Length: 317
Picture 1 (cartoon, rainbow, N blue to C red):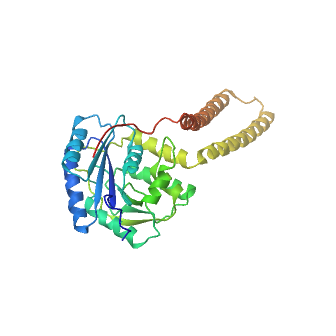
Picture 2 (cartoon, rainbow, N blue to C red; picture 1 turned 90 degrees about the vertical axis):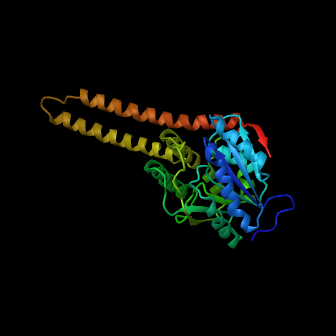
Picture 3 (cartoon, rainbow, N blue to C red; picture 1 turned 45 degrees about the horizontal axis):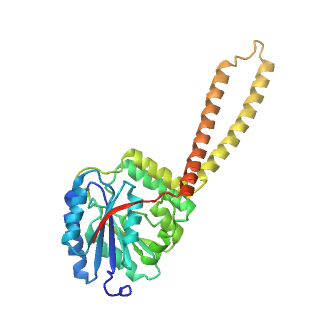
């Protein structure tokens, strides 16, 4: 067991970013209470409304926060994405242990004790992830998860037997370290691996969504994968540099080949199609390289200007 929290402060903070989930948030609150009450450990449930376009989500959070003393409602002024909404909730959290989970009930609240048992059993651990026994995600999302895992293994030396998921428990020391990173476009998995290597995972269930479809559309999934790759490593720039060297070598050998062929051919060499192909090839390569450099430059400018990661419109305790 972790050390007891000071009087008036909960032992466990559960942070849930919310988006279009007002219809089942009451079920989430009831299941969390039913799961943690028998453990005899105080908790708070922080529901962060990520500027959900419907009125139902914030109204539901407001109602729950007013009726339940352990519920804290935070309404963000603009949609900032799951990662920044999570950091907002972490900043408001007061518990020694902070649990993060999704709002769609795919992370069963009944699995929280497994995370708590694992981190209590090893005081050297800073974070424990819930590893899904069976994933209920789309093939595209699972493919992106595997890609990001490979990037993390290469860039941050993530253990291959640890699966990074959004269902996790973190110690307060790790949360403080993550919040000290003031990057404008945070990636939670990267922040955790940058802050500590003392991580582990335990098997947990992963349920289907109770209603509706995921907010992670293909465009957002691709964008998140790009953020993970670009934020975690300069490997894309190195790949482009290596490709430039290989293309230059290929061009040299191609020029030598055509020179020899021109000397041996009696009727000369028809070069117009070759010129067109080479111009298109090199033009596309240059544009790709410029686009990649532009991606890094935009991120640099964003970090330098330092816009706020989120703005809180209202908070209800």
